[in-house]
Amino acid sequence: MAVPVAPRVADCVALVTGANRGIGKGFVEELLDGGAKRVYAAARSAESLEPLVALDPDRVTPLVVDVTRIDLILAAARRATDVTLLINNAGISGAAGQRRLIGSPNLDDSRLVMDTNFWGQLEMCRAFAFQLGENGGGAIVNILSVGALFVLPEFGSYSASKWAARAMGVAVRAELYGQGTWVANVYPAGVESDMSKNTPGPKLTARDHAREVLAALADGQEEIFPGDAGVKFRDVIARDAATFERQVRERFLSDPLG
Ligand SMILES: NC(=O)c1ccc[n+]([C@@H]2O[C@H](COP(=O)([O-])OP(=O)(O)OC[C@H]3O[C@@H](n4cnc5c(N)ncnc54)[C@H](OP(=O)(O)O)[C@@H]3O)[C@@H](O)[C@H]2O)c1
Image (cartoon, rainbow, N blue to C red; front, side, top):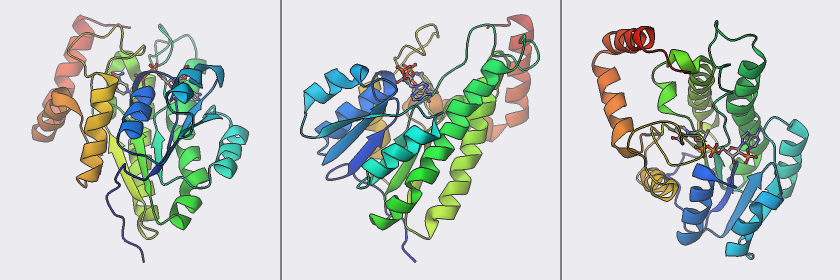
């Protein structure tokens, strides 16, 4: 049995989904600076990856991957057979006015959120699991959210998808332990990106976020809380989850967002 080893950036071959902007782009840039041998930058549109490829054409390989499309996921797995670090970053927060579980007109958008944030991450894990094992174990990093620690009712579908993905990561960690694959769950709180542009509060830059996550991985962490806000949420919930939930509910009742 191979025991998982904390992943290091230098000489890794990484694949990042949702690489063209935001948090994903920050990972690609940090991986290149950290000495990754190759980075597969995956996105829905090849054109949107051109600026990243231009950074280092020898080391950045563009891949077209929509994580809701199993045919594209499997094609990427056939192409990128040398991956040792899979960063499952692609995600959506859901459309305005359609994120509530009861108050939305229908569940079409909730299903898309689940398809992307949960099923998409899981299909990527499944498609790359075998070759990660063949390549020595490697690592999977699932980008979740503090929304996987507590439920924001105004973002009900998003929180549900991230909670499900959190459970998925823990299950996959156990299933792949024997082949030596390191599986980390990451809980960002606020990171500068298009997704977070309307949310208040201090935010990490995407580069700083990526740097913290990659350092935490090298340090041997499996549950990663980048930035002060993530750590605060983790500690408050660990102390008294029921009180925290009641406070979130009361805030929603008095000042419902979304
Ligand atoms: N920013 C934050 O404060 C924050 C906090 C907690 C968690 N997160 C998580 O961090 C991850 C990245 O978010 P972000 O803040 O960087 O958001 P973003 O700026 O909106 O970027 C989202 C990325 O995901 C891609 N994507 C969306 N649906 C996809 C699909 N079906 N297949 C492939 N790619 C898809 C987008 O590609 P297109 O360009 O094609 O749309 C884009 O590259 C998400 O999982 C998000 O939930 C972010």
